[in-house]
Image (cartoon, rainbow, N blue to C red; front, side, top):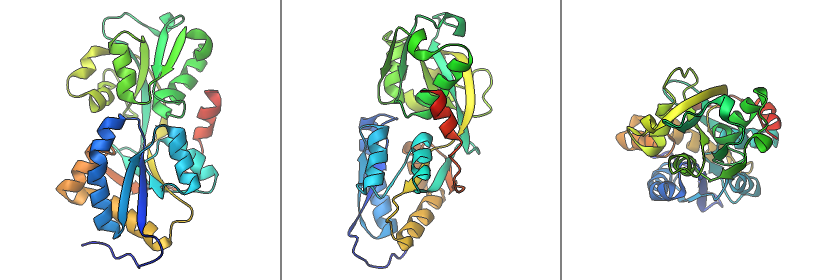
Length: 274
């Protein structure tokens, strides 16, 4: 049943997606998400893919987006400015994750050999794709700006992983389960590149944990619309189409209500990465 949203002055709803899983892939799936939200909210919905995490944050703050699927550091930045994070993703029963530093399989790369290497990252605001590994490397006495001869930001996990596979970089990072041990980092690689691709990479190290991505909502969003959006997100796993959206767009099993100010601890990670 479609949730009832009282009529008002808002004739459309804008939802933003990050570029981290690849803009082309996200655009293909944005239409499916728009159709779902349109039915759930009773609004004409536009789903767009931001060109960067910074743009995603600016769209939310400026009102160009009403809500977004945002990485943890963007959620933390939004919360600090008074924006509410409505829901956060749960993956494999867990609401947090960590990052794995990886190199190409057979390269022989280790933490001790990173000095003088080349790195490919997702985005300067990507937690698993830059902030967590950067902070971790500093604890190992490796200042990324000095340790690496070059660092590139590809805008997506796919781009960063492919840069390592193709020899344009030697090390990158990818999200993985918080209790990762051994080779379980491959789950993140295969979520991005497909089954079997994890074997093409080898693990260098795991970082500390961070909260999962979340859905911040613009401050001016009417309360009935916020309530309807929350119900729609929490109800996604109840239908096959919703399960497919959870998997294909949010890379999660379900949403849970996000605890208030649940992302603020990430500022120490951000500061450590500067």
